[in-house]
Length: 106
Image (cartoon, rainbow, N blue to C red):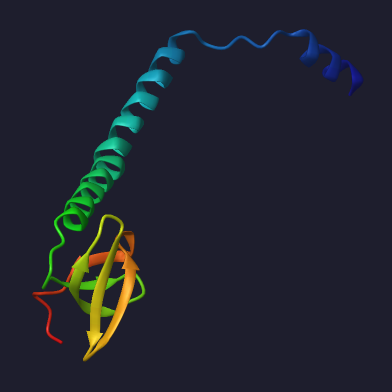
C-alpha cells in the first residue's frame, strides 16, 4: 500500500494543454449569456423606473413599496406628497414609489 502511494506522489500530474483554451471560451460564453439574460434586462428595468420617478407630476396615481395607493399632490427633489384617502396625506421618498397604477382598478 505504501509503495503505491509513493509511486502516485512521484508521478507528476500533467494537465492537457489543449483543453485550457476551450475552458476560457466556455467561461466567456457563460458570461455573455448571463449578461444577455440577467444584467441587461435588470439595467433596462432600473432605467425605466428612474424615468418614471423623474417624470412624476401632480395628479399621477402611484403605489409605494409598502403597497399604499395614492395620488401625487406635490413633488420635491427627493420626496413626494401623496393623498391616500380624503384629506390624509403622506410624505414619501421618491425612491419608495414603485409604479403607476392609473391602469389598475381600485
